[in-house]
Amino acid sequence: MAEIHLQNLAHSYSPTPTGPEDYAIREMNHVWEQGGAYALLGPSGCGKSTLLNIISGLLSPSEGQVLFDSKVVNDLTPEKRNIAQVFQFPVVYDTMTVFDNLAFPLRNQGMAEAKVHSKVQEIAEVLDLQNLLGKKARNLSADEKQKVSMGRGLVRDDVSAILFDEPLTVIDPHLKWKLRRKLKQIHEQFNITMVYVTHDQLEASTFADKIAVMYGGQIVQFGTPRELFERPSHTFVGYFIGSPGMNLIEVQADAGGVRFAGTHLALSEVQQRQISEKDYKKLQVGIRPEFIHVWDEPNPDALQAEVMHVEDLGTYKILTLNLDGAPLKVRLAEDKPVPEGRASISFPAQWLMVYADDYLLEARP
Ligand code: ADP
Ligand code: MG
Image (cartoon, rainbow, N blue to C red; front, side):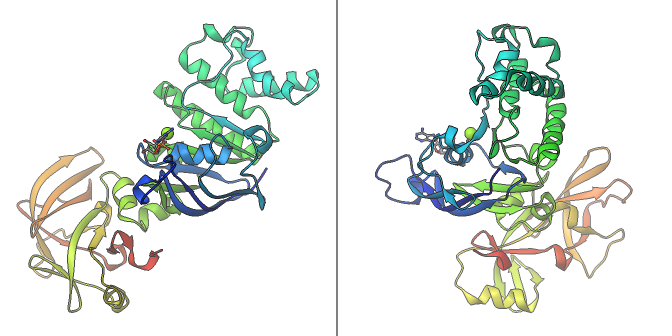
């Protein structure tokens, strides 16, 4: 079991990188604490598998260090690092039985056969594989194979960490939910550091206590699902988390706050000062659809927006508004009256975020 520390880590697949765009992982510092259940969430191509393979030792980083409990492990093989990794597609020995596949990592470390039996039984039960133990792996369906593959990753409870790289991709949707719960149970039972890679925010937030959101080779935010929702520290997190994502409007600084087209938005003095401190290229305000206040009655003191579209999703509605040329999505609770033609709206100050060159003002790196 280990705390995993990434120190000034960067990776380029090119032997002669010339700029940041040649890096699959841009320089980062990050700590995965011992015993945590983590998700690494981001779109395809952002560097998730690269980062996972660097942690496990399948890939050697071009710059920086990987430390396990303060010890540099850059030169250690995956076996020496004592890491279990489960991949997107099943890795099983076709000619072996399910039992022997699950027993393999245990026998490999010389465990006594009686103990191997009890461990295999235990993990087979967790994954619902008891009835398949005598079957050859080649006769299994794709999701059964993936369960065996996961079992091989989970069967040892003495590993430093278990890394999952989108392991449920080939699994049937109804089984996915069950397996995610199982993983969570296993985590609670054995207290092993787990890093779970996914591009699915629901999968990330049901599994993890803390989520690292990756974008363009960087971890742009590391926080609880709630923190990612309430205070996205990067516009990408605002956009990627939530459905629909955060509304972002490009603005210019003006006296007392910011403006876009003919609309002025007041900001706090702290925010005004922060904006003026540097010459930022791009300023944006962000507010989640859930946090925009819609007045029940027309209110001349509020902002006036045109109602473009109403989508009824059963337990809530999504309004599409036009606020002075800026498109806005608003989530309206089902018991609220639906504005017709025009809507009076307000942005509660606590939920109005200001982004300077894509980073939340108060959370700039
Ligand atoms: P993810 O797992 O988030 O989809 P990857 O880590 O696989 O992302 O890829 C990150 C970037 O590195 C992508 O631009 C991808 O094309 C590139 N990449 C991945 N593997 C290799 C490789 N073996 N050689 C060169 N480029 C690669
Ligand atoms: Mg990948």
